[in-house]
Length: 374
Image 1 (cartoon, rainbow, N blue to C red):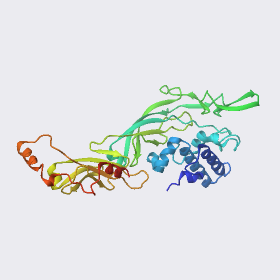
Image 2 (image 1 turned 90 degrees about the horizontal axis):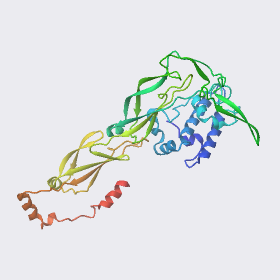
Image 3 (image 1 turned 180 degrees about the vertical axis):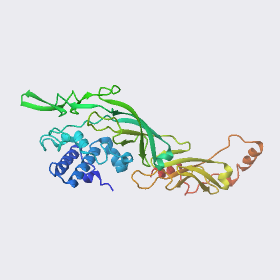
Image 4 (image 1 turned 60 degrees about the vertical axis):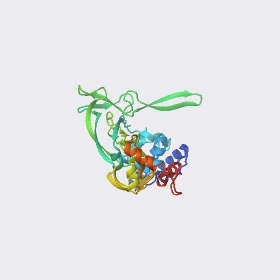
């Protein structure tokens, strides 16, 4: 079971962005591979801390994590930088966190930063929408989608960038009132990859890329919500040279159901019955996200009554069970009556049995609404 991100960084849920950054830097320096050469456990801790920081440092991801926990992202393999991020991801995204703690950069052993290793550029992300029925939302589903993505063409040859000598960065020295200051900027010739194209096939673009259709399988967990974003690692566009592929961002679009209305993890169903059915009682078949079920209505059931079917709603992303299905009883009043029907109801106008006589146990409309949200 995955450990809580706040616990990993040793902070509370109310920690400020600065406190989150400070806690991550402290942990990352503690487990940094340069400080723990050959220590696999320290390397895993280093990656786990980066994973936690990637989520908690992003307000949108943090809000989703606070609401749904790890399940908010686990549906398609990651948090935005990838489940069990690799070192290239970490140093390309968070290298500035380490400041001058390790040779003025974030890199080690040839990864990232400016410690002498070649920087690996990440390809651009792709974004698609996936439409889900309410049944698919409730039960989880695996979708196969066709994605048009850029991949590196076969036969492309690269050479070391002559501008940055393969570093991916160019050092600039500026004279200021405080003295000479040195800054590193991304090389504009190679875009930070440290390589330029020496030769390429005629069908490739200036970056040595071609477009290709690929079928991608996406595992979507039960309980996702409309607008939620999942991520499939490394299924975006490729990057030139030895770069890292971008990610495929999957936006969930929930389709409207014909009979069921969703409200969080609960579902609502309007069941219409006739006067005779309400008076005599009846058995009715209704729709749920797991198929049809039959419910029994007692005789004398009142319009407005709400029946609660436990666990027949939407599963929680946090795996805390499922919501309920609330069946709203509506007694249908005929809009037109024939002569015989009219005569019957006229005879019943003064009948004591037909006069409204609510019991104390019969809740008002406002009480029912209050119960629904409690």
